[in-house]
Image: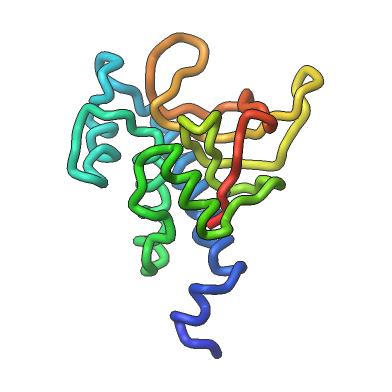
Length: 165
C-alpha cells in the first residue's frame, strides 16, 4: 500500500478531493446562501470571506477555496487549492503549474473571463445551441439580482478556462 503522501499526488486522489469539493458547493447552494444587502456580507458569506481574514470583498474564489477546504478537512488531507483569491492570479497559477485543461470535469475550477471563479458540477452540455458548463458559483446571481451561491447552467465553454487540481 502506498504511503499517504504518495497517494495524495495521484490523479485519482485529486479527483476524489475535487468531487468532494463539488459536493460541498452543491450543499451550500441547497442552503440558499445569500448576501444580506448585496454588500459581500452575510452570516455564511462572512465564513467564506474569513479564509483570508477579510470581510466585504469579492468572494467567488474564496467560496471555491472554502469548498476545497471542506473536502480536505473531511478527507484529513492538505487543501490542494492555492491560497489565491483573485481569478486572474488563480488562472496564472494554473498556467504556471500546468493545471489548465480544456475538457472540464466535475470538480474542476472554472475561471470565467479572467474575473470570476466557480466549481464545475458536471459535463459540458448544449443549451440553445451553445456549449455551457454546469457549475456552482458564489458571489453571483441567477434570476433576480440577489448575490449568493447558485447552481448555474449558463457559463459558455468559450468564455471560460479550467483548472484541474
